[in-house]
Image 1 (cartoon, helix red, strand yellow):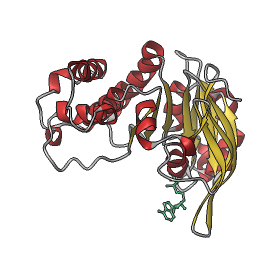
Image 2 (cartoon, rainbow, N blue to C red):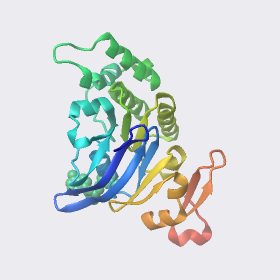
Image 3 (cartoon, rainbow, N blue to C red):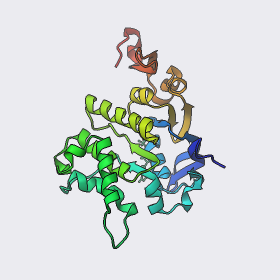
Image 4 (cartoon, rainbow, N blue to C red):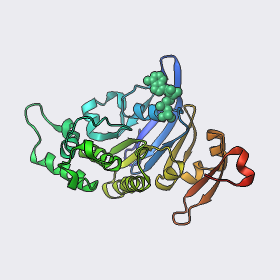
Length: 273
Ligand code: ADP
């Protein structure tokens, strides 16, 4: 039994193959309710595939995902969309929907065939836009927004689903530094103020270390390390998984680990990046 007040999601012996090709092997972990969990690892290690197994886009070849105490296979797609919001890595915004229209798409899992949005739906959409500071963009076409604004709109759409768990695939990959910090601060605030649980794939280890309280480090489709940033972001783990030398220091303001990377042959000259 999985107690949802302790762990909202549990992954048990999960494996996944594309055809004959094994991609994920024997993954076991739990996601504490109200936590910010980061999935990290080199390109091709299986991060996106794992996220797709968690949101039912892909069905595990073996093992299972338990979400809110139910086997994910038994949860209907529409029901799942009321419990889990997904923010994809890319959203092809080639049609000029307004921000309000995009956000209200998040209410689709709640609408009945013959009746459109009710006052309560518009109110939930408005609150999702206020939380993400996109209310003032409501009438703008999404095609005209900056990358950071667009990302906030997609988070608003997911929030309009009133989910308990939010999954994001590299939410900051196309953003500049200030937009990146803004999105990370927003995710942290959603956990603190709305009681959400968030799982996000991160490319940037230092961002993951700063904002997440729980990390999963993947190497070639297996979990190499999991736990707090202090436990996972060690010199030994970074070298074993990414093949680069590093030093780890505590960030002065947060006490969280910060990694400085070195080209292997430059270690002596201490050229960090
Ligand atoms: P990551 O997100 O860590 O970069 P992915 O989950 O995207 O890794 O990919 C893991 C592995 O699965 C890679 O080797 C990739 O080439 C392979 N892969 C991803 N999508 C497909 C697909 N649709 N068909 C076959 N192989 C795929």
